[in-house]
Image (cartoon, rainbow, N blue to C red; front, side, top):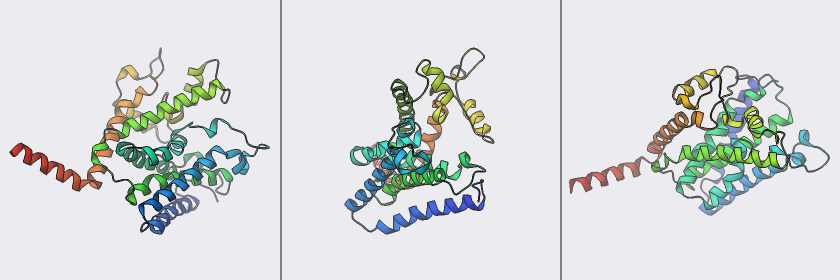
Length: 278
């Protein structure tokens, strides 16, 4: 069985992923707030453990003992989310927790819905299992705080959500620079070229997979030309899609926030109306 898009294997993985999250929701939805936080923290720590200990947890990473490598770090969006999630849960304010719900759910969920890395590959392999374990755990620990009432979404957080996303991108760049300086990744002699070629999460330039070139076209249409590549200069790192992505994420976060937090929004509008009337 292969993991082709819309194949039986694809829908099997999707059904198991959704089923796991739904089962978690119903299993603990009537528990106390403290128990829910403990469950979330345990799941987050399990995800961190499998991420940091890849070489001793997943057979296809076995290399004769524990090895800390670039892929154990915050090298992409989902890896960054895995590592920062517990800190946001324990110490984050309203805006950070809301951002984790939105970005921490959307990022890995998109990867699960469109797993183009495995198109045409066999379903039964360790890397597929690792991929779904870490991404499903990340979706669960991001969306369940909102579904369980651990985090109460506020519509007022919509402007901060895209800033959280781009903060993760900056963390990815910084992570690469640190790893390069420590010799965990090649490219120490020409860091810009190495990062430009690696380009996680489109940090340096667009790199759409087959069939998704329209995404690049749509983003570039709303990007100031000064940030786009020409014959004499490359794309401006991060800034080449900051404006379109910021606007898109802020609008989506506002719409979701208004749908979820509509009562508080109505109360705030009524309070503002009364204040103006007085």
